[in-house]
Length: 228
Image 1 (spheres, helix red, strand yellow):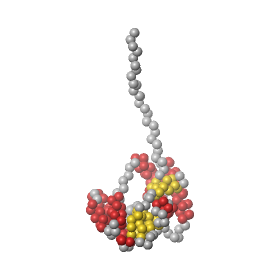
Image 2 (spheres, helix red, strand yellow; image 1 turned 90 degrees about the horizontal axis):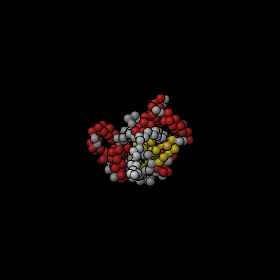
Image 3 (cartoon, one colour; image 1 turned 120 degrees about the horizontal axis):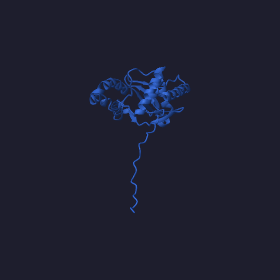
Image 4 (cartoon, one colour; image 1 turned 135 degrees about the vertical axis):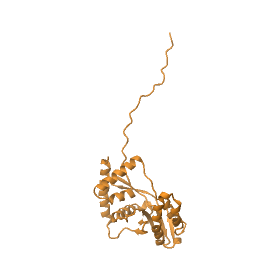
């Protein structure tokens, strides 16, 4: 009688890939404020684009080296030395953008006063929950003045000036989470192309802004869920 043979390892058959999980609703501060600044069908198109970008994990920040140069000038009290040469140091494709940004950034630096009287301060990101929508609150940096008061700074880079809606939404969300971002600081939005600094207006009631943004967030989630 021949010895029984031991069966060899079996080769698993082909498997059917499971469905790819849909990206969960989420927005950065920049994305959400751009969303609230849109009206009508443009809102749906914008959210649909964000959803596809999130699913493909694409995206690129062209302003990184510019922000680094600005922060370096503040930190080392160099009054624009790094900013004035950054446009010549980046890749040629980004030079027109940086050239357009530098004059306003230099004006912003000048508005801070004596460079030796201003220090760069680190800020922390925070996660805001507008109903069920997470929004990442991410200032670019903080500054502290010689008299002790501080500002958490968010930069605005678009060609058109920020709308009132953009200013209100940005500053309200930053202010609501300032205890985590930079305690006891004031949130500011700096229109970097024009060197203009925006503060939360005293004439606006924060509870009204909160109610408005809650409605915007609910609509954002609804559009996200139905976007193809």
